[in-house]
Image (cartoon, rainbow, N blue to C red; front, top):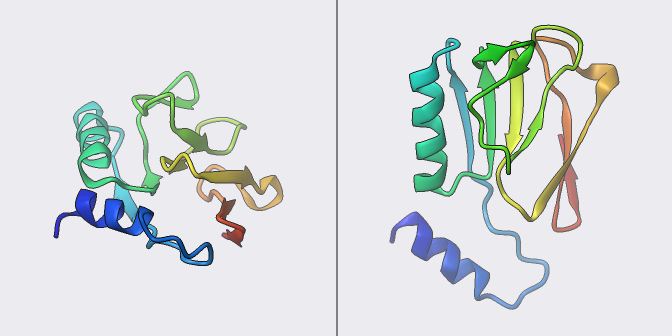
Length: 117
C-alpha cells in the first residue's frame, strides 16, 4: 500500500487516541539550490511531516528555498546551519530559544495532544 492510501486509511479511523505514524526526514543540503528544490519535491511526493535540515541554502542570514507555507524553525542570530521544518498542518511547534543556536535547533512539537522534542 502506498503512503497516500495508507494515510487516507488512517484518517478514516475514529479512535481519538490513535496517532498515525510521523514521517520524518533528515538531510544535509550542503547549501545547494538543486538539493533544496529536490527536497521540496520529495516532501510533496512522500507526505513528509517533519524535516531536519543541516547546511540549508542561506541568503541574507535566512534559509531560503523552503516553501513559505511550511513552519520553519532556526536560530535568529546570524548564519544558521540547521533548520527544522514542520510540514504537517495538524502539527504546531515552539522554538526553544534557550537551547537553540546556529548548529542546533530544539523545537517542542505538539501533535494531537502529544508534546515531544
